[in-house]
Length: 340
Image (cartoon, rainbow, N blue to C red; front, side, top):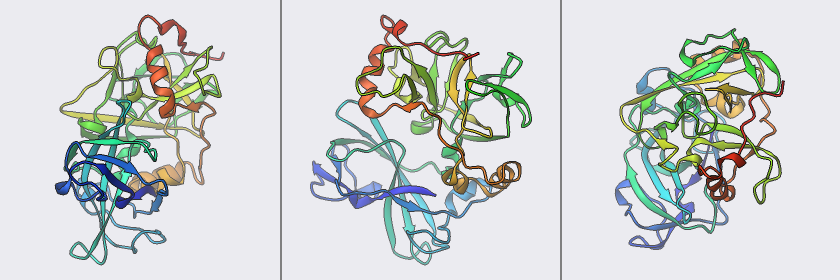
């Protein structure tokens, strides 16, 4: 299950296509200003679980019970869009085409936001590119730790994430040593929303270079809460730390990612600092390739995890958070290593 907006929910408020809703990639004009309709609502789109082959990206179909479309209708990823908000933050979206009765049938256009969209906010279209041909929606679930990232085991040793195996015990912040139940992996072209974020050694107190997916969340603790922040514990996506000086995006070639699943949604340690594990719920299970879903369900039948209590950093907190990450202010931001 993924959640999408109807393409018409995004409309051009200023520019060459003024008044038009979001259309196919070829009809879009860079520089147009878009807004999300204030009445827009995310719609659930249920997808049949694809196979493991890379051709599955071009053979995804709607599952039974989907409020959108009919069972078996083909779903095609038709583009990747990058917008820029007034505060300079980029928003990534995937264009999805749902056909009725086959690829030759009429199609309805939807957009899957990979970044939050806010009504009554102006978004400038920067680029409209073809969707990655080898992308499966399930791949979006596994953009966690890049190959080579060292993860801490229960005995205090750190090993590259690709050497871990289900059944090993890792150190968690809240529940001590916990058994690793499942490892997900995917390899994608390191471009745009799929390019890894690099946090050089020492930037957040990390022992080595931390390389993670852009939407992977890091766990930060602050004595002085940011304005509007309810809790001291903050989960922040790696992409929000990018300033192209201390933290940057590494594009080019391929990126191999690994995700780790436990009995609970945990805070674990990568390169010595706390980060989240993959949270498993109905939506993530539904989008997993069939063999991977079967593996998770066989080890963890009925598993539906609650999110960690840490507060997610919303868009309004990002400017203040980034200002605290500047070298002169970094001592105000503290990374919790262990409760023990």
